[in-house]
Image 1 (cartoon, one colour):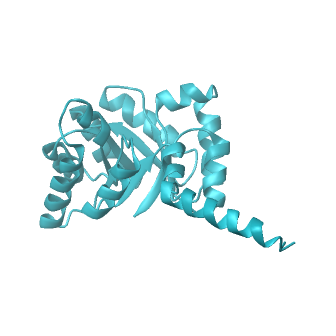
Image 2: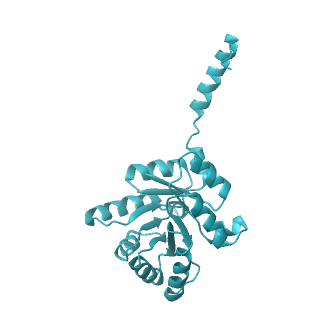
Image 3: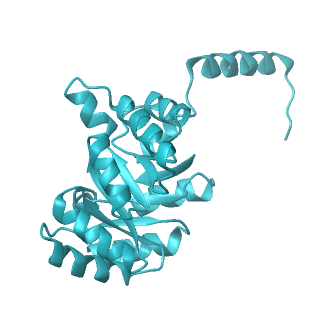
Length: 217
């Protein structure tokens, strides 16, 4: 499974990248707003730092404008994945941009039917939102499983990018189902290393080590 980090925070990306965890980055207008920086500037800096795909989202809602914005974003770097919403106009933009050789991430997917359309339109990635489905008392992981089954049935090459990740459990379960990629905030990725039994065991080891009176350095 590939890990993308869902942020526009350069320092957070750098830390995870240096650890070898980051395979790509996803951004959106909300994350760019939080960074307080110009979209083109911060996106270029992320692309220079990360070798894998960097999703940069269009803000237009009609296909012709989405296509023009997508082309402009794609000029930032060769690893840009243009992010478009899973609307009818978004699918039109996806078809055009993917046909021109650009990576496209079709986002805000909430049904298997939408995921089929994204694959047919040539999407590089489709982003089902697990957490937002959970918020309305639906199981977002069920959607990942449905899309995996359908894509396997027809050998669709679009990668399933599990998004709206709220917990470590989301990541583990999406991995078991067979999501190709997961994108999560830095804090969630970091929390994967945490376990109370690890903390308890380490505390016991350190207490015993103190009793020896020894030093390694």
